[in-house]
Length: 479
Image (cartoon, rainbow, N blue to C red):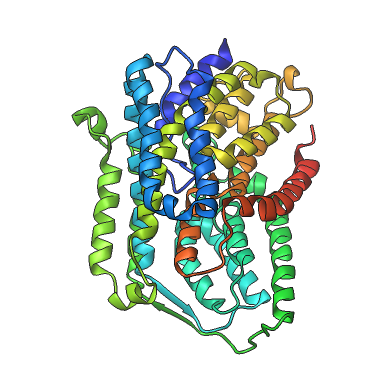
């Protein structure tokens, strides 16, 4: 079956990703091409249990969760890993790929966290609806240049300081919506699924040319809603500061480190053939990119301006929590990803644009958006007789191929739906994208009013984001 063949190819190639950030584990794309069997459905229960405990632990059994979350996360992950190691054909290879991608993920996140911690941005102006909206818009644009993780780590602390004394939960939530997710939808640098599409052959500026209007509509609507929230807060006793703000940056040399991190992302044998693969040469679970990112992080920490680190109240607790939780998320997510891959390869040929949009989106909100993007990309390409393993075919697909199976809907509409859904819907949950959790932890350390996992969903993402995403569907993908 052609779709199945393309599915195998794309999952096998997925391990090249290591992009700028992603969903809960955006760089976790285990390779399943040599796995003949599909895991039993019950094996997703550890993943479901871990999500439930992340959602309810801080709320209902705070002390237990605070003390024992590493044991819970590692324990559930170890259970799934043991099953794959002893019971699944090719399971050791899957675990090896997962370890590689976890190390790729955590070195990228950690390096950006450390480097940004040495940049102290002070905006000498009190937060107001207008100034906050301007910062969020700037962050959305910046996300396309240094990725949503880079922009989030760079701007969350000045955003918190600007709003000290008037900070509410919605400030954190809308920062996550706009800067940590939707902002990075215009370039392959912005989000890992788009970076993978670029590596497969989608032209670099294709996303900008196809998504810019949907991006503007979404960002404008969300900033408008945010300003309504913030204006109501200003009227309730937090007057706007009309003084002209002054921007002061300490630790500017760390911007060079950020540039080095961005460059290091592309140092992969799948991107530059001349780059040697440490995995193949020495059977190591990491490559040259991870070594360089680690060196950058260490160098940045020891050379960073001490005043900047102190002003940011820098410590390693947020990255420690992320590292420990995502060990479990990476491991327990393997069977869920594999089951979805199997389903997509068998049924995607019958999907309409509507089904591609909503399924890609909701799965990207709770799973890794990169393999979700790739699986549905492969399925959509199959409707047009296109192999995403061939760069020329991918460019034809992105250019708008036609197929009697798809009716009068051209292939670029399918790719646009998958691209937007995989990036935008990452804002649905804290684990939907890596910087979401980082922003939450940094805000919590600053003693901000941070909504818990469930409150974030039912109070903000469902009532705010779903109507906006429904509007996008009506405007662009109602096929």
